[in-house]
Every structure is written in structure tokens, then in C-alpha cells.
Image 1 (cartoon, rainbow, N blue to C red):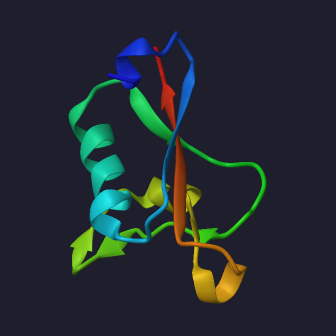
Image 2: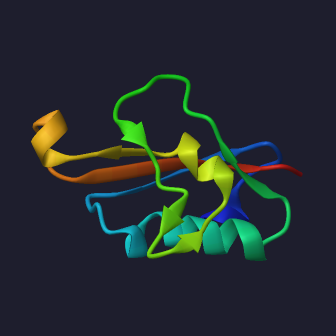
Length: 89
């Protein structure tokens, strides 16, 4: 529903308070692969570590490296994930 509301060239910040790839990279990967005219955009500032491009032996979109993950043991916060998805129309 959120993606359908985006204006032309608009961006959506997808984020979760989870480090589970099933809620993060796997969701974004499926959405961007199945819905035309959306892509993953690079986040200009580095807050965490790069998103995963392979999970459970499954190769994902290379652009998922532009998403970011925050880990409790590294960033002294709860687990967190965020990714910018852009409407290319």
C-alpha cells in the first residue's frame, strides 16, 4: 500500500526493529523483483553495516548492499534495518 502511494521519483524508507533477513532483505528483494519501476537507492550516510546480498545460500539483489543494518553488539542499540525504495516512474 505504501509503494502505491509514492509520487513519481518518490522514496519510501522501509525499516524494521529486527535483524531477521526474513523481515528485511528477503521482503525488499521480493518487492523490488516483482513490482515494476521500483529500485533500491543508496543511503548517503553510513549509520550501520551494509545489508545482506546473500541469505541462507540464496543470492539476492546486489543493490541490497545499499540498505543498512544496526546490530546490538556493534552499535549499542536494538537490532534495526532500513532501506530506501525509489519509485522510478
